[in-house]
Image (tube, rainbow, N blue to C red; front, side):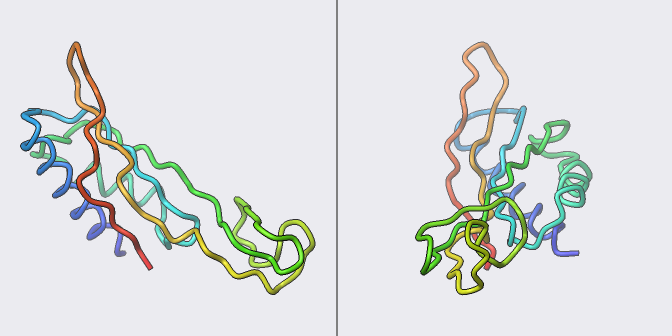
Length: 128
């Protein structure tokens, strides 16, 4: 289960960003995950809930946005699909060169307060 090591990295970045911006707590972490990142969303969120205890992100939800597969089909051109299927969603061809879908990065970090804004993610990580 590599989700726990991914969550440890996310929490390290989130805690560093909270400290850097003077935010005592985090109210939400928004994560973007490609369909081919090989992570299980439920396991990821469960690990986050458990490992966030005692950090500025304790009690904050981890919202996961699943990113589609993107590729280049020699017949159709650029293609995109939300299914883990390795043929072209338009023509069914199997010569698609997949160019996206392995991403995994913090899209934003939200903090509570009257002027609550998203903290920019200091770093983006990619699983490959």
